[in-house]
Amino acid sequence: MGIPALLTLLFFVSLAFPAESWKTHYESGLQLLDQGKYAEAQESFKAGIAGNPGSSEMHNALGLVALQTGEPRVAAASFERALVLRPDDGKILYNLISAYLGSNQPLPALQKTDQLLAGKSGDPALYVQTGELLSRFGHVAHALQCYRAAEGKSNKTPENRAVIQKLLAEADAQIERDRQVISRLEVSLRSDTSRPEPYFQLGLMWIKLGQFSRSLELLDPAAAKFSNSAEILLAYALACYFTGQDEKAEAAYKRLVRMQPESEQVYFALGNFYADVGKLTDAAASFRRAAAKNTRNYLHRYMLGVVQFRLQSYPESEASLRMALKLNGSHADSYFWLGKIHLLQAEKEKALECFERAVKLEPKHLGAYYQLGLLYARNGEKEKSRDAMEMQRQLNAQMHKGLVALRMP
Image (cartoon, rainbow, N blue to C red; front, side, top):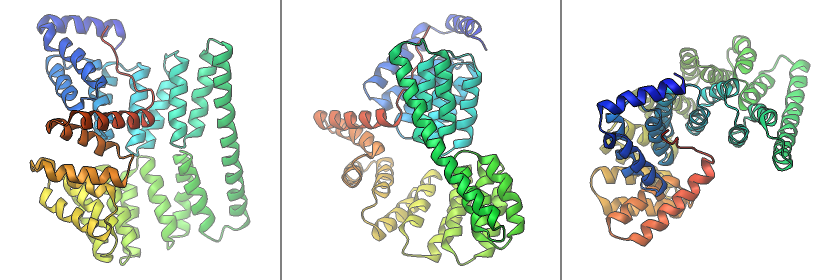
């Protein structure tokens, strides 16, 4: 839907609903978002969406709240809804790319980057921001494309030209280093095709560089050739997952389990796959098996606890997280999720203790600072709340540079 059509739609919707039923909620939500009052902003945007479900601005803003509060998968869903309503908007695409990268979904992130580059956006600053974001996540080739697009759209002032040239030079240098690594691996592979290691290393390198299809082209025949190689099968499963072939990935992981039924790592890998694709019950079962294989590995218990939380099995989640902390009392994320459980049980003091412990162990724990800001505010500790929210905002600025909330026309 083009912008004129969207404006017409907004006009007719505004006739059906009083302005304060959605525009006021939107403007109020943006103010709350700017102040770091994310829970209140979320409620305001949700109320606005109830009045005007066809507003791309509202869905985009709700996605921003989710991203700022450490829920990138939830944010992606909101940004996707916004993009349906405004498919050519570069700012929404940028936010969606950030959400997908933040939730470990590189394939859709790169697809949205291609959509941004193919679109009508002529904003060189947006291309530069996208390139910097992709570069931070290791996708330098796509970053380079963004910088070149920015160069083509730039107003050619000396300052802009110097910035873009510097970014292009840095990206070119990194690509050259990656090219040399790839070249060495390809030489190794050509010199000895009888061992699985060169296939495995080269396949993982292609995955690292975001060349998922190329990795699969290499590893698909390698998986048949080295049918008894666990490392080849693992890399093949990853390549299938990153190319959206979830059934093949699941089959590869299950085969890996049959090959090494006593290995904790294969059950852990399968659990991570199930968690990523949303099969939470299967993920929990896999993490339980991993924990049974090695009762001293805290990560198995931690991941089981997180999945149980997502399944809303809070007593079981608490037990798993406490076991993880018994095995490793310095694990900040276990304290964070335990604190969220205490919040749901209205145990504010216990929650506060967990979040304080989390930021002590991990001074850059964004989610814990956010929760502390809310809890301090409820306790009337305004200065401590302000400090926690300020720290959360600073960490967010570093992580999600350039996020943009659309303004109402």
